[in-house]
Amino acid sequence: MNIYPKKLLPGDEVRVIAPAKSFKSFFPEEKRTHAIQKLEALDLKVSFGKYVNEVDEFESTTVEHRLEDLHDAFSNKNVKAILTVLGGSTSNQLLKFIDYKLIRSNPKILCGLSDITALANAIYCKTGLVTYSGPHFTLFGADKAVEYTINYFKKCLFSEDAFEVMPSETFCDKRWDAEEIKNEGYWTVNQGEVQGTILGGNLLTFKYLQGTDFAPDLTDSILFLEDNDKENFRAFENQLQSLINQPDFIKIRGIIIGRFQKGSGMTKDLLTKIVRTKRELDNIPVAANIDFGHTTPTITFPIGGEVELVVTEISQRINIAKH
Image (cartoon, rainbow, N blue to C red; front, side, top):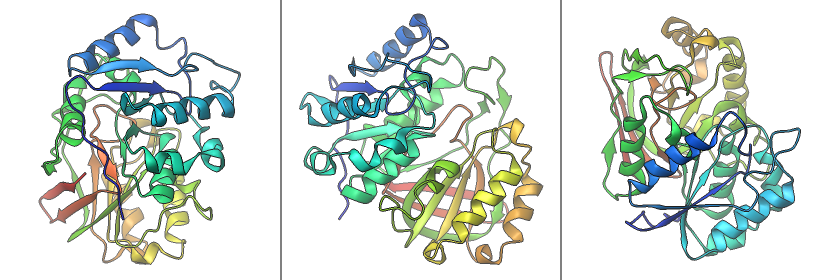
């Protein structure tokens, strides 16, 4: 049975931890201050894990120190939500050592994206706690396209109400870009109408869980998938095929794909060809170019929550029904 953490209230404390990358020089003190101010404007108190500034040659810190900050954030009764500093490539190092009983006994919001996909889906798999793919703490320090991000952060984490995901008006291809690009809206790839349980996040990182005890059951799921521009359209196709080859993939109900960065080389025509040449996807609705992933702004969505997806030739509707 799923556990939904309590929503945020005015005055709640949010703890910032670094289960993947720590703070680095690219995120100077003034940006950190700006991010704190954005969260304080939501009437939240911001605190930091003990080791968020500890950085080694892997742009992270030891497994032991990252676990200590994670466990302390979940056990501290004053902390109501946990935000990650950034993504990276190391959060899956923690999975075998996490105290899942502690987390199950102290359910609270965990929010992050990219590499945090491994942590968020593993915690949901092991405890039933609904986690959240949404902005890192550092994204609150962005200057452009941040209001949309904050709006959907509030819709998902401050309220119980269902909400529809609408396209942003503009976006930035990279998180710190000054240029805002007009958003062309959602892409219809395959038509259909379904509802199901949300799983996924970053496709490459989600794939790391395959064949482990930390991979959630795909039955009746709608997968939210995205990749950054380090993974071009050919890599995306290979990763998608790897997911399709999993024994329980046949039980999924739909796919929602985040916006690709320009460097990936992905286009609507290429993505449509990728999907249409995989017979396993013939009867599965697929919508794409949604506001999540490695561009900004980004929505916040619940891993383990419920979504309704309607895709027609000319329209797409994504309704986060339970979060």
